[in-house]
Length: 234
Ligand code: HEM
Image (cartoon, rainbow, N blue to C red):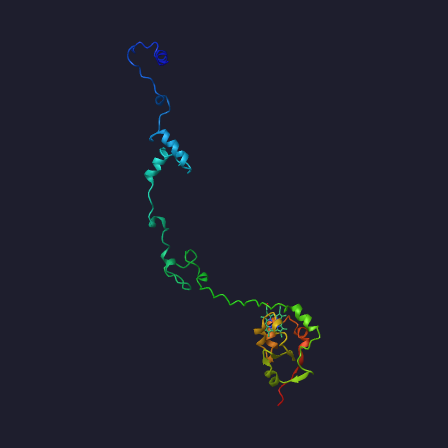
């Protein structure tokens, strides 16, 4: 078989003597030129074991060689932006910058924005009413017929008497000339007991008006009426 191939390949080539062993082209030679790596077999095995994506650009590409030549690690100084204009860097809030020229073309922050912002105002927490103390529950209690006044008859009440009813379990307050027993309403007040207790034992008309003038106190506390505020007798 080999001799047949030889005679077929070299037939008509008189330069090659019959006796000399002609060079048989190996598979390696007629295959595409091998890569610079060690061997094809090893590379195939590595490919099978390694699931990482192929390198791009390929390892021996001209593009990669070119990039690597120019590649250098940037220092912090190179990475950081240039320092700001000194006039802006040293400025103090509320004080216009002296280094930067003041005028329409200036790069300085306008004085209106250099003011120190005011502290955020304290926001009042929403009061969580205990279960069974909603406005509807209050309406139900009012119409239940239960005694919410704590007195037998309506009275004329001077400020000195009103003053004596300033405890949590005995709190009276005057609104628009009428004196109410606010004790039963305390746990129902949407603004909280603490706020309502501020007017216990005194005339709360002013504070009530500044807080929620839209609330109809006469209707809300009609069942708690104990009397009418009169001037202190001399
Ligand atoms: C006995 C008299 C009072 C009655 C009947 C009453 C009634 C009410 C009612 C119905 C509301 C709800 C208003 C709404 O949602 O629009 C409310 C809210 C409030 N009340 Fe009164 N109030 C009284 C006295 C006072 C007093 C003397 C203060 C003291 C500052 C006060 C402080 C507040 C506050 C801060 C709220 C707002 C609650 C919130 O929105 O979370 N109330 N009150």
